[in-house]
Length: 196
Image (cartoon, rainbow, N blue to C red):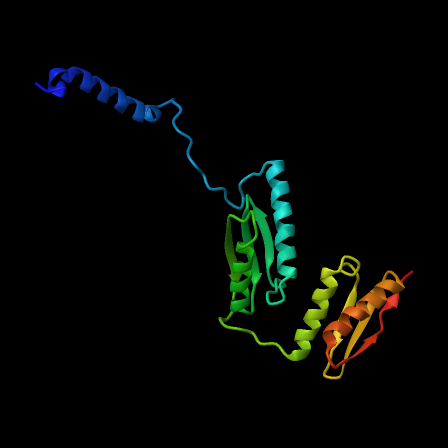
């Protein structure tokens, strides 16, 4: 006689106990195992989570600004519970795809929800003058002294014209230096006014 056949009541009792342990969370009023609930864009956040999300937005924007190929000018970037939401209208589908891929590389990003609307698919090509204008503006945004200065950039085939205002003469000169770095053969005309 085998040990299993010798004591069938014990095996039945153990099986019944195991069954009850597995399904005790299903009874009304009892507490079962925790269930994972994916937070949404409207889920409430704790103050600590809100701070983490704000820091993550800053890290994402810094990463995008430091990338020469990706522009986020058309994207409204927000973060909730580590999930990045992109909204707005994009004229360049490929730029949006590159932006999504770049954001996915930032530490702390759980996933990216791309809600950008594209009126057409494909790449929106820009002229050399527009490209230089964007490069100079990006240089201003990266500079902590110039990113809040109201400086405008106009680029033609012959020259780059800077206008607007700067807080100090040093800021005006720095703006001119950044423009000359990206202007190529174009002459830089620095018409920025200094507001002391």
